[in-house]
Image 1 (spheres, helix red, strand yellow):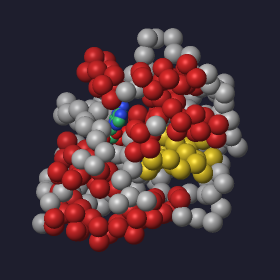
Image 2 (spheres, helix red, strand yellow):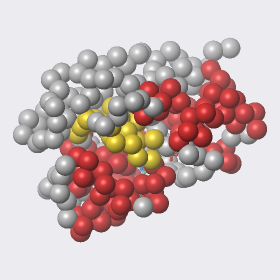
Image 3 (cartoon, rainbow, N blue to C red):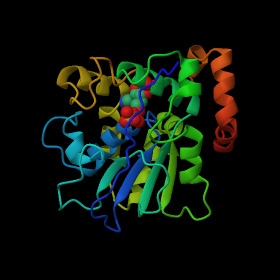
Image 4 (cartoon, protein in one colour):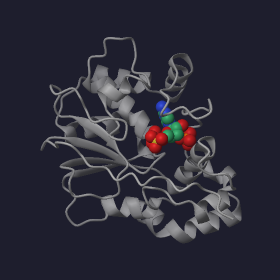
Length: 248
Ligand code: PPS
């Protein structure tokens, strides 16, 4: 039985790309929105009181929602889920433990009625428009010349956000004060983003039957979600990449 709807393949034709453009790339559900919020606070003077799920599209646009319209702000930073493409001049690649990603992606797909089976069935049957988790990570990070690519992990960001964000801003080539970085981290905490979601809501393209977008934000949540069969099946597909990235 087929448990998923075939999703339209998101082949994306970028408009004009500048040499200093930065693409914030990740496999779905790797924490991209959280990093977008932190970068938005660091790089933009936010006139309203907070970054929210509506104005983030103007600040750090998601390319599937719309190409940047603000021509003045450079470098531009844009969110993408594309599998490896040589067209992006500079890339921040955010990765997360594939076992947590697959659990998060499962709930995301269930909430959006893109899938209606079990987690095991999701792992064995789901056909993401962006390919497999392992293939995506290897495509972006396992290359000989990755000098234009800065890789960082969700787990390290959680563990040491100040150091990770400071290094990332160096890669982008912008100077941001310590106070501003600290406040970006605080304002983008899980609890704050959750209340922003509750108070200001989600745009329709993110809203999924009124389920939480800022869901759990756990490291290692997979341990209580994946049964042996589902875990074995995921490890069969992805253990080489998990171990290559240093996950246990
Ligand atoms: S998407 O739909 O691909 O853009 O999703 P993405 O933003 O990449 O990832 C969603 C997961 O990130 C969690 N999240 C956070 N974690 C930590 N801190 C903060 N502030 C935060 N905000 C969102 C979100 O809950 C999703 O993970 P899960 O495991 O489902 O909770």
